[in-house]
Structures are given as structure tokens and as C-alpha cells.
Length: 574
Image 1: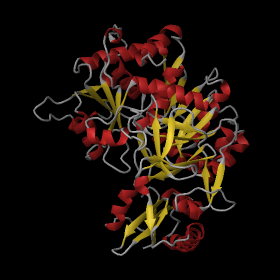
Image 2: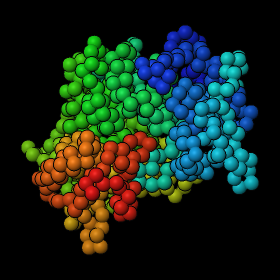
Image 3: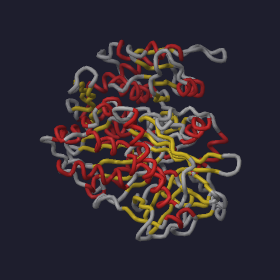
């Protein structure tokens, strides 16, 4: 399969299963219960080829086409048409009308597209970004839903050599300015085989008949793009899609689709487990059977044991099997997937001595910090390396996770220095081997052959000379507050101090809110002291949605530091 391509697979699906449903998009904006739009493989192929022809009126092979469209069938067509047209796709989110979106502007400056793909509902917001730069022409704006895509157009992709880069996956920017990861079709096919092999090993590394992907994840994020669009084409699966807004408005819509679709394969970050468990009612669950769900891949941020317990407990009455939650580690630079846990048992939680973890050593203990296992990595290869000495660490010693395999991408678009640093890791004791490793920037360790994730190197908190991992502190506080938490360290001119930004639900009156916060402050202070042996210099209580996050839902901790220093958080405890 590694030598195949997305256009080739589309042609094959359209030929062998022309009337089977390929993609279904459920529009919950038109009706509360949703309006379904479905394309068969034959119709999908025809519309993709027609749109590719329209793109080629403005672009040559290897040019970039930025997709600035809402989550819709038009986005699916736009992305796939880029493959057919031989242009490099750049999936992005839609900018807000009347507001400058610096991330979109930065990506457009970096990618230098010749085409912007959008829809009639968002063209007014997109047009301001179609500006000429450096004496070159302005990119053409192609409005997908205003084109007649029912016309028959002959495909030209089989006679042309596509660019080495299939699309640019711009990073979410949790710790730096977004950079475009150059993803090839070979990367996609290699990562698909790795992921299916790990997720579906109990089925002989082949998806069972009737597998359906269900996704609300945004297409401009690597997990949403691959789960919602790429993997279904490679597997020949029916893909059922909705928008992130539809999920956030009513998480039960996600749960309902998992029950209605056969052998549902889905994914979501840690916060999605919490949200679905908290906001799905007994009435929502009435008559639903979740016993046929194939897998719930959980990634994008470190998976918390408490979130898994809440989710499995909430949906047990509907037949949900705990083993189908699959904690998974990955990143855009590795296309998506790196490792996941054992598919035959529920996620394993191992307790480690907290003090030893802060010293960089993992020692199992009856009390301490509970970490979820990400299983025994098979493919791609991983090492845990001391980032300073560039030597592999002993077992149960925390270090940076390095990755090597056909899924590892070529580098960052137009960023040779960053590419050399991130994608050119060389072990100090093997300088002549020629092996280059992807330096993930993630801390973790291997204990008993199992991989455990700690967090990002750049997010490490150093308080009074001791290392503390923000994910651990956030889990401790979140267990008390029940909402999103950002743990940051702030320099007060003498030493680094811990500050926790805590999102809470406001009560009916300000007086009730203040009373609840007084109790919460005492509980959180005690929990942090007991679990981590430190005290917080400040607890900042804010309304839900106040903590800045990336497009994939990760906490932007550096942005939190800046907002705290500038006193820009609206405190409920003021």
C-alpha cells in the first residue's frame, strides 16, 4: 500500500463500490436533530475531479492551496481535490468575519498559496487574506459550493507526478509560532498501517467488516483530518462527520452516533471524555447501545485516569466496554500516530512515587502519581533520550521521546534550522550510523517495556529547585474543581512560584459563587500540598472558556503566563 496514492484509492473505491456511502456530514445548524448529506464513492470521485480541474485553472503542480472553509462536505472535497490536482493542501480554520486572525495570516504568509478554497458562507471573511505579496499575484479565491461539480471531467492525476509534499499540517502553536509539517503520501500510508496494526491487533490488524469512523474533530487538526478523511479512504470505511460546534453544544450527539453506527471508530482529546460524561443525560442515553464501539482513541493531550473512569462509569449502563478506550501518543511531525495501549484490556493505570518522578526517576509505589500506560511501542521505533547528553536513558528514567519510522515527516516548510533540530536527532554514541531521529519535545519513560507520558519539555515547572509536571498538578486540581486547569510557574524576581488558573462554573448569584470558591480554594490548596509537597502562590478562578487553548484543545501555558503577568484574567475570586 505504501506505493499507492489517495487519488488511486479514490478511483478504486469508485469503481469497486460506487454506490456505497463514503462520507456523511450531519448538519446540526439546520435542525436540532441534524440533516444528513451523503456522498457515495462514485459521486465523491466525480466531484473531487471536477473541483481539481477548477483549482488547476489557478495553480500549477506543487503550488499551495489553503483551505479556509467551515467543517462541511465542501472541506472534504477541497482537501481531496488538492491531491487530485497535484497541489499542496494547507488545511486551516475559518477566520472570523471582521476580525484579524493572526494565525491564518501567519500561515498564508509562510505557505504563499496561489489558491484559497472556501464556501459562500465564509468568503467575506476569507477575501481579506487574498492579498498580493512581494510583487506576486494575489491568490485566487475559489468558492467550492458555487461551482457545478456534477459535470464529468477526465482525471489527469494518473499522468502527472505529484509533489513530494501532499499537504502542510501547521502545528497548533502551544509553545511556538505555527510551523508547517511537510506530510507526504508515503507518510500517510505508513502511519495508517502502523495505527491499524496497533489499534486492531485483536482483529488480525484488519478492520472488521462494517467499520465506521465517527468524528467531530476539526479537519485543520491532524487527528481530525486523518480520522475523518484520510483513514476512511485508505480503509474503505464509511465516515460520519459533524462539526466541533455541534459536539460542544450537545456532546450527546457524538455518543448517539457511536451507538447508531456499526463498529464505530472514533477519537478525541482528554477533555472530550470529561465533557461527554458530564453533559450526557439519562434521557440522551435512553435506548442506546454502545456495546459495538470499536475504539475510542484518546490523544492530543496527556490522558488522565480520572477522565477515563468518569467516561467508562457514565456509559457503562449503555453497554460501553472500558477496553475500547485507547490512550494514544502522537504528534503532527510523525504524521499522527506513535503508540497506543493493549486492545484486549481496559487502560492500565500505574502509580509512581511522586517525589521520585520530580527527580526524573519512575519508581512504582502504592501511593503517588497515577499514570496511564501507552502500551509497548512496536512501530514506529521509539527511544527515551537524555536531551542534553543525547544518550539513551536507562529504564524507568525520564527523558525526551525520540521517534524513527516511515511515518516521520521530512521537516518544516521553509524552516531549515528548525527542521535540522527537530528531525535530525543523532545519538551521541552512534554519530556514524546515519540514523536521524525525530525529537518530539515530549517527556516520558519506559518501564516494563510500557511507555508512559509526562508532558512537554517546554512546559516543565521548576519550583524551588524541583521539577514538577503541569499535567500532574492540573489533574490534582481538576479532580477537585471539575473543570480545565492551567498550572504555570511565574518568576517573582526571587524565585519561580506555582500559579494555577482554574476554570469553574459560575453559580446563580455572585455571593453563591464566592462561597463556593472559598471552599474550593481550601480543598485545592490541601490537594496540591498533599500530592506534590508544594503550595500555590496564587489560585486564579475564572469562568469556563477563559484559559487559552490551541486549535487541538491543548492548554497554551505560555500564553497563560503572559495573561497572568499582565493581569488580563477576569477573576471570579476578585
